[in-house]
Structure formats: structure tokens, C-alpha cells
Length: 319
Image 1 (cartoon, one colour):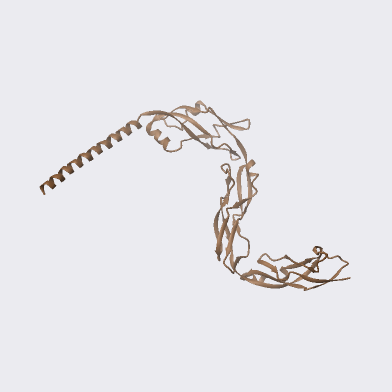
Image 2 (cartoon, rainbow, N blue to C red):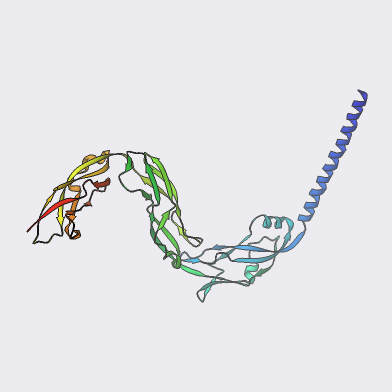
């Protein structure tokens, strides 16, 4: 018992000595860091250009220009520059002049002494001495949105109207050479299954490549559709003969054909015979053909999948 107690006391004493050692080591490390950071260093960093007051009617094409700036400052300041991308501001209303169709910036004494750096930072050099910015006149263009979506409805459900994008068009602002080639913007291909209620889904637009110089009024749209319960309808539609020579008389049968279609319950009573038109085009008649083919050339927009149930109309030519 006495030996065990003695062993624990010795162990505890050793642990305290180790803890004190590491504590002093930590203090020494902190003092070393502060000592290093308080010293001054000279280095060159690539600064991104923050473009200020660019005229609205122009767009800068080479947006990746950088300035290599040599600075002398203490370690604490360098810590700030190394932990985030440093930026320098060029004011296009004061620091830029236009020459030979380009915007140009030149290193000057006034810029070297500007107030973008604190008094603790000594600015030694900037390179290159001149920056040239290509620019183009902005074009504003409104283009339609084309919906690329595949919708699978629960049996008995459908939409009376086509799927719409909201907004249905997008305004593009950018260089004329790029914007003039864009005729429309498509939605990213989308698929919706087992739909039985109104559709209201946000989808991304399929933007052109290299869009850094372009601005879009919207990059996403809502796909919308009113989904309703559908039922089948049938109507007997009169058949008309078109493109028949005036010197020919025809007797044909049947005089009307049955047209089958799908329509929403809310629009069922609105569909009438006058909304459809079925014709037989005599000019399409083959010399050996003994029947005419009926074609559905008119139908209301509120019906779906309209079809003629009879595919031929018999006729007799009377001289």
C-alpha cells in the first residue's frame, strides 16, 4: 500500500514537470511567431484588378488582367495578403484613358502614392507599366426561353395548354459579337413523372459557354402547367372534299367521320362540331386509288390526342 502511494506521488510529480515543459515550449513558440511577424519583409504579389466606374455602355473583355506589386511591410500585414486574394482598384473615370480603340492604364507617381495602401505599407514597384483593356459596346437583347421537359401524367390527367416558362424570355447584356449569336435559351432537360396536380418547378437555364462577359436577367425559370382530370369525347364531323376539278361530280360515303379526343372535364361542354374540320384532298388521289383519305385539319387547342376513327372515304365519280 505504501509502495503504491509512493509510486503515484512520483508519477504525479513527473507529469507536472512534463506539463510545465510543454507550457514553456508553447510560450516560446508564441514569442517566436510574434517576433517573426513584427519584422518587415519585401515580396511581390499578383493583385487582381477591381474595375470601378466602367461606363455602362461598355464591357471589358480581358477580365483576367493582374498587376504584380512589390511591397515592404511587417509580417502581420503579409499574413492578411497571403490568406486572401489581394485586389487593387482601378477607377475608369480617373485612371483610364481611351486610345486606338482600347482603354489604357499607365503607372504614375500619383498612383504609386495613392491611398489604397496604409502608411504601414511601402509600395516599391508595379509591373507591368501599362495595362491595355479591350472593350466592346454592350448589346441588350431579349431572347425566348425554350422549354425542354418530359412530363409523364397519371392516367386520366393532362394539361389543357402547353407547359410555360416564367419568365418566358430573358434579357441578355454583353458584347455584340457574342450576344448577336444567341437566338434563344433552353431550359436544362427535365423529367417529371406521375404528375396529377399543377406543375410549378424551378429549373436552370442552359447558358452558353464562357458567360463571364454576359449578364442575364434570369438564370432560372419556373415551369408551370395547370393539370386537370381528362375524359374522352367523340363527335361526328362532316367531311369536305377539296381541290376537286369543277367538271367532276363525286358521290362519297360516309358523309361524316367519328373524331375521338381527350379534353379536361372543365372544358368538355365547350367542344362543338364547329371546332373541327375534316377534309379529303382530291389532288392527293392516286390514279389506282379507289378511296379518299380523311384528314383532320382543324381542332380546338383545348383538346388532346384527337384522331379520326375511320381512315378511308369511299367515292364514286359521276360523269
